[in-house]
Length: 314
Image 1: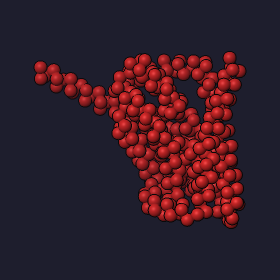
Image 2: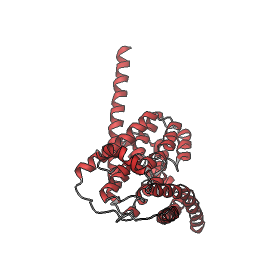
Image 3: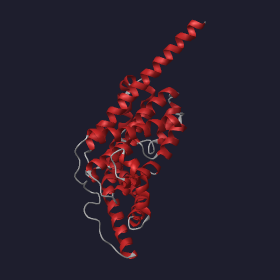
Image 4: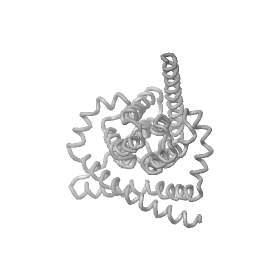
């Protein structure tokens, strides 16, 4: 059974790498080529004043835009083309951990009954707040990040040479991510075949109560926590319907998950960039727990007040 799971995982990993590569390759190539044209400098200078408020250079807008409208892999493709410090990459990684793939993942939230404005407010708000806090609190991280375009800008002339440089950088980016993605998909497949996700869901039921949710919300919660909102979308939507998860519990679950989902994948993919990934994970977890408990407490308290008011009116 394990052998079959590994085979399925490898095939899934290769397919995923191919799918992601089709995004990473053109994005990296285009951004790299644009660096040798007046287009990118113009955009950077336009946005630079806003980016400086959160401790980032103007060109950091590239991965932020790519990550929010596409996904983290496209954002990393953008990061690979830039000269950034560890602190700058960490700020971008933290922002994108909270706010990425907005179009697809917001659509998933809406299908489960969660209001769009709630998801966007939480995700974008946490991204901006985290960047501001890290920028003012962390005084280190001034060294250049590993895996990013480090050193002096390569002087390249001629359309052919620039294009070749972009192709090499794009292929390098795909290779770095394949090392993470393929083993990850093997592990996920084994977890699914061994029913570990299902067992984890049952074991997590008491924790759901602490967060202010009913136990029947545990399956979509675990799915989003491990596989992510996009990859686990089908399971989450089906579980929400079959287990009769209330709109309130689904909203609270999503508030947690938009702050902290796909914890394995979203953490590991930043390793090639040379940033401290454990603080990235712990900040996401702590933020998600505190935010969810606060929202659940306020929501439950409001419900109790409204019920008491209804009783008095009678």
